[in-house]
Image 1: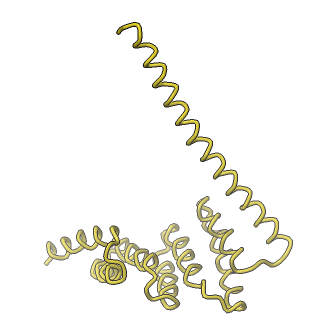
Image 2 (image 1 turned 30 degrees about the horizontal axis):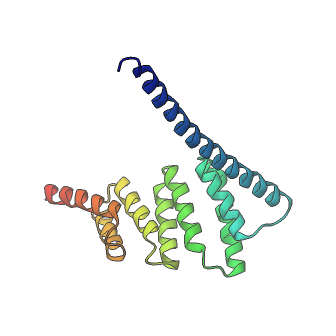
Image 3 (image 1 turned 180 degrees about the vertical axis):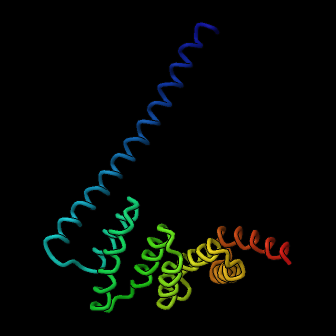
Length: 176
């Protein structure tokens, strides 16, 4: 039995390395694809005017890279294009813009953008969750709780809203 132990250990190690290599390769391919999209969009938008969707996509890529100022600029361009194109994607752009402001701790601007997104799509659960999160950051507990409850009206199985509303509910009860 002892003579097989090194073979078993080696086999397990080889399997773990192979699985790790597959995951690493998948991540490299995904990153490469994202970088190619990023470069293609940058080049295109530098050479000519793009569509609202292209500005939004590039802004989202900048958000992923945590380059918030650049993303805000691109989202604003997307909104200008959206108005010209009469598109229905404005809620997405306003939500992304709100997230960019939130990430820079500009909470009042984030709230304004999330509310704007909700004007275009009142049942936009992501924007509602984001709005509730900003209210929470600003210590507006009752507004945050009310907003999380609104999320649960549209999406009763939303785990974030469930968890946060329960937590905030306990805080409201404890403070009374």
